[in-house]
Amino acid sequence: MSKTKVIVVGASHGGHQSVLELTHKYSNLDIKLFEAGDFISFMSCGMELYLENSVTSINDVRNFKPADLEKFGTEVYANHEVTKINPENKQVTVKDLRSGKIQSYDYDKLILSSGVTPNDLPVPGHELKNVYSMRGKDWAEKIKAKLSDPDVKNITVIGAGYIGVEAAEASIKAGKNVTLIDMINRPLGNYLDTELTDILSKELTSKGVQVVTGAKIECYEGTESVSAVKTNDAEYPSDLIIQAVGVKPNTDWLKETVELDKRGWIKTDKYLRTNLPDVYAIGDAVLAYSIPAQRNMPIALATVARREARYVVEHIFENTPSMPFSGVVGSSALSVFDYHFATSGLNMTTAQKADIKINTSFYKDTLRPAYVPMEKGNTEVYVELDYNPNTHQLLGGAVLSTYDITAQGNVISLAIQQGLKLEDLAEADFFFQPGFDRQWSLLNLAAQRALGELEFTK
Image (cartoon, rainbow, N blue to C red; front, side, top):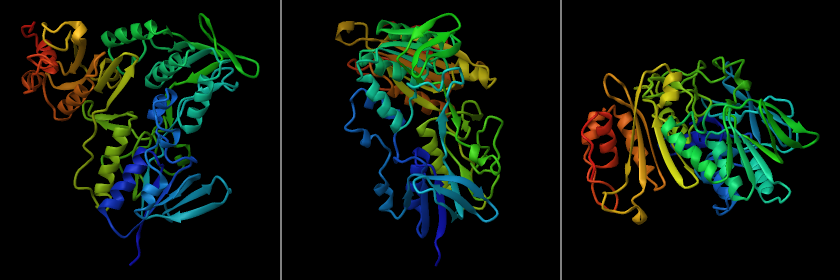
């Protein structure tokens, strides 16, 4: 009996999860996993930990080793770039990047998890030496070398999102002079509302980061190597530039075959199928279905890719899947020096982009009852809840504190996923123990505040 041929393109989170699910759910499969990179599979979200010497080895900062999947019978090919899909023959064209050899492989099912690549800011001087990106093992090693180089004194980070903030923090901890520049008016402004970004902006500044917002980059100056970043109103000495200015889908190779939108994202139906028969797409190159927005949006998260992979493999051999992909909330977390935050769903910025009306409630309190002094761990905590102004259904939220309360972000995410309202969260049955929280739990109190209820002060 011949085996069903399944090809997976891309060895990051989506590809990894796809193969795991395939090998554990089905038998008699011929599975091939192709990855263009030479290292399988570096976890870029662990790069800051590596730069700060908080990992066992750079070779351990990965989702899996080839042998982890090969033991289940999967063939894993590094340095193999899939360059074309031939839907008429149900084949992919693959180039061995080491030998240059080009070969075709048959598929019965094809899962695309091609991912994204970092944007390169198209300004004069972007081709100079010491202009880096912060993604992948090669860039991680290059940045690490610069952080330990005494000749590198001034580092400028372009982009104040998650990656940019991580780069700035790692650079400060390495003893460098750091400037963080963004075109919008506040760091992390696409992820958090103003009340929380104000706190984090002060934290960045207090730790030595020069935060420059509302800036337009005009050029990178220098001869062979970069020497400065010039904006519309200032110039910043720079021995190293780390660009963290977003990503673009790695889909140029699909333009002639797979239907893309005008920005290059792969178009899929509600079953994560492309326009080609038996070809599915998951991960960062796909616009994910957002539960709170009820539409497809760019949500580039490992958790999204893995959930999409799990769904695709569950239904891959059904002629018509028994149910559509239910979607994701979109949840993430980050530490910014002494602060930790988690965010889920929509905020004012993402809701506006999606043309969705929301109300936002900001809540500030202490972690524990009033009789516990601050020096004994009764830190300030902050919560934002975003909700439908008419129905009170939760659409987003975030938590922030110097104490790690990020697990509360998972509670908010579950509440959004299950369609809960402020009233539900205000009365949800959470535990109380004064060593951990208040008589009403933090999210109870935040929801009660949003509903305009009497403030609980003890």
